[in-house]
Image (cartoon, rainbow, N blue to C red; front, side):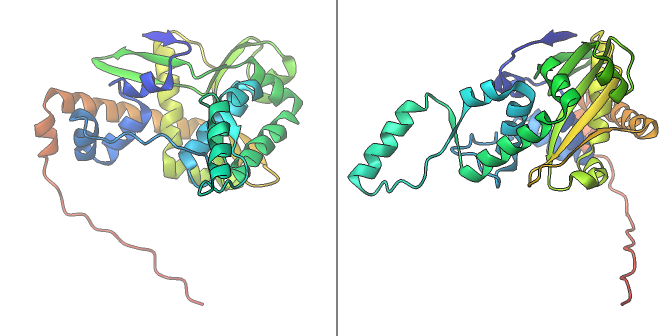
Length: 288
């Protein structure tokens, strides 16, 4: 197992190792995994030309940057897009071209998304111990290696080790000198994060990251979610999964990895397994 710091995100995504998202794809549909990843026919998400609230992936990446890596890094990578420029006119085109030359490769962000990112950052900074915790973290650390014949990888938003701040340790319920993995989630329903955990299989993510961290020799006390609402007043929750939920995630990923080993040994045999009749009952409609 290896731990890599400062690996470009493009290199991480290019690597063929199995990540949580690939494992979830496999568990949902081995055929989709076969075509997307085994045959390499998956089309990579195009790079955005401007970050907006509607582009959930790009907006989430920007929020990860400003909260996980700090405002200085945010300013190096993103820039507020100016007001409307009429590029049909000579003056408008010249103004736009001049602005493009000056942004030095930074990604433009529309006003609504920019203000939301700054608001979410300010909200988190208001909580003293949480702000100190985020400052202690190492962002985007790659953990990768072979485990029982499969190449696996994960990339925690923040790896926070050797925490000696008594207030932080008490708030998180970890011993002095303990370590955590922190994952940042943007949401429209921070107060109903339970639904997101179920929908997006976050219990598998937590279990997978803790599993790889242990295999890499890291002693991690907890996996913590920081779930932040995209909308004013940018409320947030700090969440850990219960013991039984983590156990369920661990069982699911280990079973999934065993099935993947069978798949890689004989992909076509796995794909040709019989499809069985399945019965689905819907809850009866409510009576008004």
